Length: 279
Image 1 (cartoon, one colour):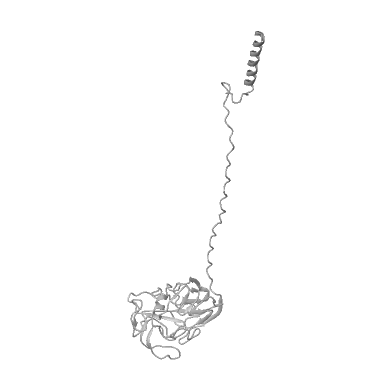
Image 2 (tube, rainbow, N blue to C red):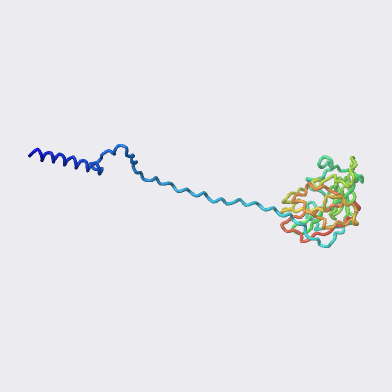
């Protein structure tokens, strides 16, 4: 081959090499100096979907239990009297006097409620205790708070071996409080509460029972005020207000009505009460 042809061949090889370099061919050529590095492409990582929070159910606010209203006025009046009976008799055991848990021996009750041979007039008041079971009135036993009571005369017992400061002479619903009262408390103020009455009698009460009767209890009182002989001794049912469902702590005021209702059936109405004693 002539020298001229060899020269053309060499030049052609240089031209092909330059063209390949310009096109990035050659299978792995390095980038030109100054060219930015190309980051390898990566598949986007999947973002987990958020788990929804459980829906919150608001806690309901309990409603207030409405205060029971006393049964409406019957427009009738219980005329109490010595020897009268208010309600069905024979509903308590014993039907006369105290239970074995009460003042049967003459020993002091609640520490300072004594049983004396005579009744004191130093502090002398009366309350009315009405008891209603399943809507019907039941009578208090006669001779509660008496040890070895005598015979009744026209439904009234006035003799006994001894009398506790708290006692009943008949079944009229009247509870007598005749206390020696060494401290001289005026009769406008209370000395005892209903639990003292029940402790002498020997029965208990609470929100779901009264003595032998079981059921939800509602208690109404004519108010913790001294009434004495105002209004000729008549205390209207319209004075009754709801005390609660536990009668134990009711203070005893002169001419106070305490009505205890044991349900679930309650009386349709309640009567007024006329006290036969002056205070």
